[in-house]
Length: 80
Image (cartoon, rainbow, N blue to C red; front, side):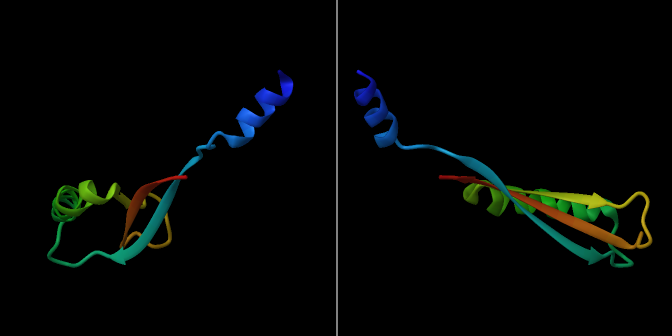
């Protein structure tokens, strides 16, 4: 019985999951507000992200030496 159980465990596909993370730093444009960046991010998620399993977010530093930067953070699930 133990051999059968060991064989079944070894032959069963093992599933692992992780998340891939992209972090892209950019500078704010003078005439583009944070609301515009959020609208672009939402459009990206709707048009491309849903079809490819990708989710994008916008991050803004609250305390940093560089407060003029915006960070685009992308998440993608990896399943093996």
